[in-house]
Image: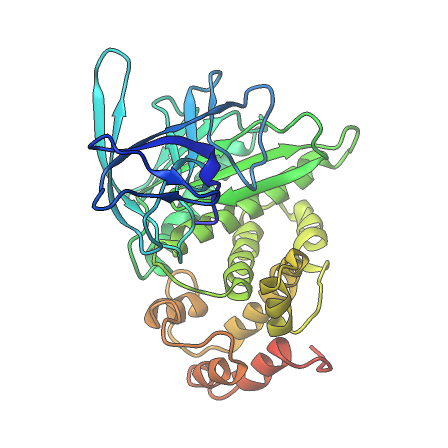
Length: 365
């Protein structure tokens, strides 16, 4: 799925026949159902990788392998399903695990293989393992606990399908020539993060607290809700993730941090009708994501405010998402269909808001 077929080599059927690479994908011999293949792992302790598009890699310093779907795993189709994996260790020991491989509608699979996480946190519903070297701030332990609690709540309130019981949070090294900033991505059972601070910035720690806390919530939202196999368009997926991330950050952050939350995630609004932005995004304009993160998140804040459904632990919108099986029967790229659906749960108040945010170039909001 959107992967790098050339990143693997020596794809061999169990009976010895070789698959052929056509420049894009591997073509299996007839009736072959079981394969072996080689994956070259990059050492990242010194060179680093881009957390937003991770590659198959390993860390000797922190003793883990990172195997993202796009460069490490072959898939026969987009439907997902159960996959048996066998890990052969030095000394002859093997570990066999049955894994649910995600469909094309779910976040990509990130396999994190390691027995020595830096930290581990548990609740009755979810376990968080932290690999790599997270930033050494005194509030990181509290943030990990807050993230775990928030993810566990969303797992119960927002996921209408199978959700992961363990989420791995991997901190990877930043490439030496990378610009200052924070980068992250979400997989079906893991999130990958990195941060590089700007030297001499007196507000660097406060900014880091805001960005790490908000982004962790955002990526965790993708991991948890994606497990349900929803097929949301990007404008819904990213705007909902940021809506819930901002809500989570407001509960965790110190009062003096709120100004940076406003600067980074609320005030920096890019206003374009959401369905227009979706069309441009689908056509390849990735900059439209900023519309989803800001204007889209505000759309859901307005919808949350007028809903009449009984709330669950994560609010009225979360209750509606769960009750509608992740909006499964709604065309979310139709303003009229979404307006009609939300009108049923808002005493008819949603329609003008939906049309204003999704299609109207001139309305005042």
